Image (cartoon, rainbow, N blue to C red; front, side, top):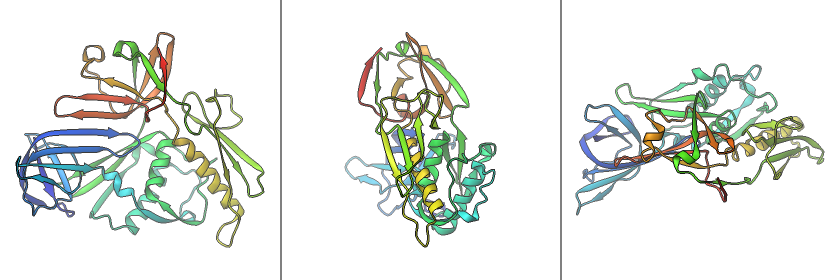
Length: 351
């Protein structure tokens, strides 16, 4: 295994260097983290991107390079690689009137915001590609209008909030030869696994009620407009609903702003509704179940585990929950741990 370094134009910097160890954590709803340690590189090297390949030259992973830590005594270099989606940590001005919201698909939504991002931001790459072909049939929820005005918005929020609400994940892929970075979006839960928790050494569950599981939207006169809630099957619904809700209820209120020359009363309500529902997306999938695939390989078998899987977890009482693969942790020593759900919790339930 070796690593190669590139500048922001994807031009090679120097030679290749042996990788001695690495640790990687992939996250469906947050930034990945990756650290490699290998041969010492010259102090003059200032990589923008680092690519890690196997002996046959096939790319295993890559990322934006932090400042290399060079140790003259050990003759080694350690580099932390940042997730390409950290490029979204910027703001863009969006004019929603330029987006036709009638029968809006997520495919058109992401193409629109990515065009605004690339047009307004010098992110350092020449060529970006966006693959949202799997989202053409997924329609934007008309109960959560985007509005029609002009606003300054975090690109990170524009990407990650809909990803959480519509249950998506994104895989960035670097093509060094063609000098392109492609962001591909996929729906969670295309495939299914079933596991019995006790067979995997899990005898207790960490649970939480979450910070917020219900939101209420009011207009500027404090008249109730709508209410939304998280259900037991990790969906977000507008109330009233026949679905089983999460209890005890923890509500957060969202009050529409006062109208102004640049903000109509209707737009203020749309903004408040959008912010309220996206607040709930930050509290989905409260369980955090850890499975050591290496330790329980005889139970798990050779089935694949990635973010496309929804996992049905069973206890002695039957089905506990359907949960997405939230994290995948691997390293050069053979570690292979997956975590179901997205957050570490507070309360413990014995199984």
